[in-house]
Length: 293
Image (cartoon, rainbow, N blue to C red; front, side, top):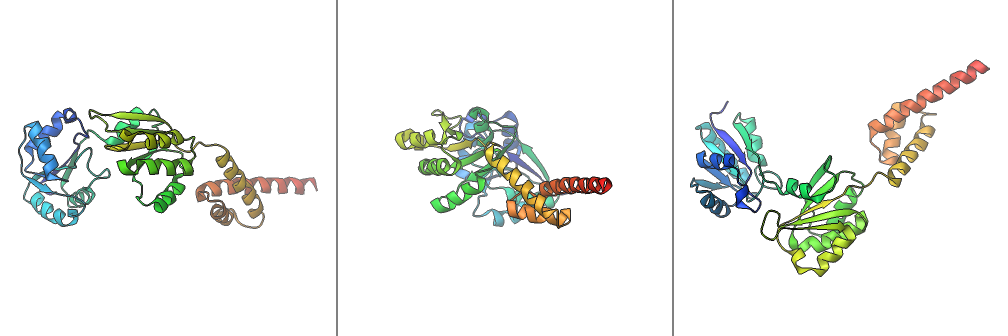
């Protein structure tokens, strides 16, 4: 076990009052603060009445910084990791540091707190029992639409970050790929003075983004309802069943399931369970016919 300790510290996403007492204590007691942007973090520390040595750790230098920080841990140092806003590692730097620190036996602890992801989900009014975070969509239209097509049938609520100058085009692409009637929420400047939450369908939000200049300003988190389990799901299930009914007549269930999964885009374990059921039913029918003969 390495003597040092790493604190992963969540910091406010806008309102400085959201810095917890425990987070302030961790920052004040750290031997070193690893910050995504030292200028940004210095302003936070000044507001909290804290003064500690800092080192930059961002996406462009993390690989180089980790070795240096591991050496500090070996000497018993306590390091606090912070990003510009919210919880580190969630679309922010820090993954490589946490991974290698944990592997080296460093005591890694979290000081939980603000996150734009959970804040947006909390106010969206869309299902939160199952959701997935997709980060930023690709900036190029073709790549963005390709990513969206891959997500179009995702049934979990989707959470995205988006740049203000791309939100209008992103909403337009979402409306065209997911359908204009899909419910969504755009959360802008959460916890800040100009916090705004826009609700509606993707089509309505796309139109509003084009019409209202303020819509395209500030930090934006986008929450989109998942694809409903409806006609598409029923059609897929029926297609899988028809395919397996043909295949199990000639092939063992495992082979029939593998082929059916590939042909229909179904998960193999789902296809295999149905293949076993159909094979058993076919065997029972054949046995019954032989007895009647």
